[in-house]
Length: 205
Image (cartoon, rainbow, N blue to C red; front, side, top):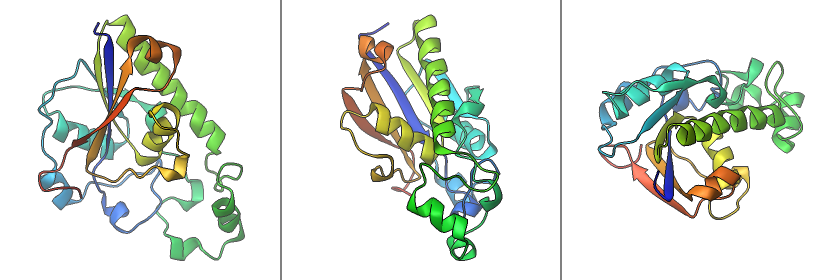
């Protein structure tokens, strides 16, 4: 295993529900046709491939890495928005529980949805699985196709510069490589370098 280890995080492509700006957590939506046509295969090779088990990530993974079979991780699903799934801000803005959640999303949860602390624990469990698999297999490079919320959470925890969850902007159409010193990754410390990897044929979608 190299002294530097890479975990590359790729956000899934834009879906039809994303185009509506709807909340999309554990429910699913197909990639837009334009998005599917614009995502190009990644030339860089990785030792291990992982993906959220939701369809939009599976489809994106097949477009990025067409010859690879990823390991599916339910822990890397997006946050569950419960009864707000596939609803937009105009549909929700007059609800008191929605306004409470907007004012403090870290202590309030959507109805029948997921509390942020539970989301955080779930993603950490998935991260630990990836790191353990890398060390067990003596691998230095892993690719992960997942969701915006998951990537924001991992950047908050492991990016070189500390920023809060909502301060991270994670648009569709990019990948982010977190480059760690081996022992820092083993100890759960921050990476030393964050590097962008474009995945769109014509800029960012």
